Image (cartoon, rainbow over all chains, first blue to last red; front, side, top):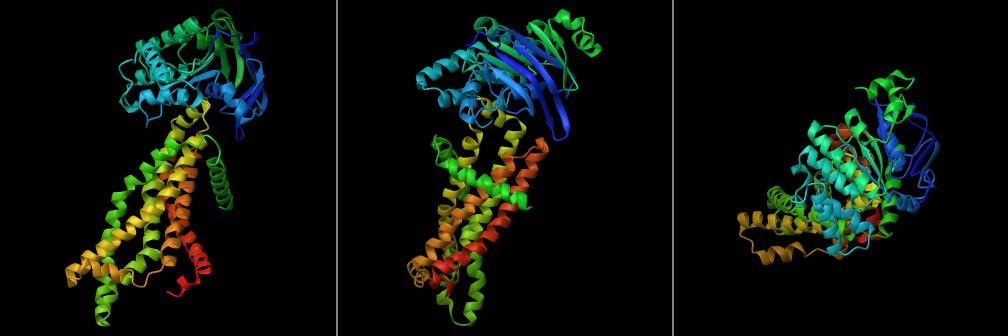
Length: 244
Length: 251
């Protein structure tokens, strides 16, 4: 692992058609740090995560992952860089034709040379860690919203990523379940010093998780700092979002 | 329209080149073969049997007039093996499989499952699209044979009920005017139908960006476009078969 920042965005812009989504966004996240990105709906928060894992390409600017510029990488190199990252999608995005066990086994079978026994041990451990130890043979459709989110988190963690990207961990969940997911993220951050970048609307969760908060508005980064920094931001929207 | 046709062609070409690139996704191909092939078998067999029986009922009335009922098995076999079997199998598969592939892939796109596969460093095109196209291409010729033979059985059942003709005599008459050129070019052309069904429906599902609305649209368009393309490709392939096997044109 390099000593520099885990993730760097430099003057990144992205638009869909003629609609600008992100405009000249720059920030960095250090290894082991948790950055929560707040903002109103449609301000480009989820797009930022997809740019970091290169599911989308920026029109302008550079994105660096552990010192490597991923903006113009070829497929093979991109695949290597992506293996450093895990992504928990807002909807969990579990493969609905596979059991929970198969969902977690897929990346291990495809991307590692581990034996079946090793894979089984890893999956059992990760599922136990997220509280789904008894549900490995269930299909995604049989899981509740909270369980699906845990399962998505388990799949994101199964390759032990150094950087974890999380899109709306609390969306669609009650406060207690959302808090349990936050707890799992915190545990991952502390136990493995995983870098977290979390997009959320849940200010309470953000305050618990974040070392730093970034606020996006109309595609621009209007605040970036500690909770106290954002509380004293010159932008009213940033102050208002953090005080909700 | 031309732009979409071009995009679909490039999509199909990419599938062909990716099919020969590692990893070969054999497990996924087996899974899709089961989905496309064996799960379609009841529909194919039932349709073939019913069509065979119906065709015999129709032709019998006419051939009786000319005292040519002995030709019923021959007409039946030639009609099904040469044209009806391949075309009907293709259209049935366009309905069952084309809509399924379009709906599944567009749903996976809408629910971010394709993004999830990419985020796990897995090539989603190779993992999801290529096995489906290969499965359609490989499954359709044997399914066509099942439909052809089911139709013969349906025809025999109908003829047996009308005249008491024995099974041995029916089969012997069915293949009396039969040549290999009647058999394998029409059967093998269904591999092209299968490739077209897989490519078109996978393209419409994989490239949708219309969210949940796109799921139904991809399924419907998958069936409509695949069916239309099968009929058009059939015309071209028949001309091609006549060119390669001129004796079949004389039938």
